[in-house]
Length: 120
Image (cartoon, rainbow, N blue to C red; front, top):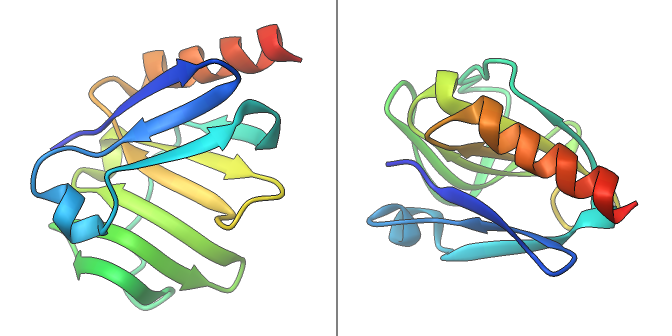
């Protein structure tokens, strides 16, 4: 199930839907736009042994929801289909990156990039 993103005031809000709320142990994440350093639409890989699950659910090839610790720091995943995910890199936040599945990753990335340029 895909999540949704929206811009609310000067924040980027990631909304999680359905059963993923339980699996990810979160309903939403709000990040100030000035903490977003970049957004990528590159395909994401499962990397099942590259990250340690901190809280959430993981079944490689099926679902990855929640917090995972990587060599780069804490990551948040909401992912079922790796080809529908955007990767948002962050500064001054608990998470180094949020990997989030959306319906249309190109338009989601454009919304975020436009909001960052208009905010800056």
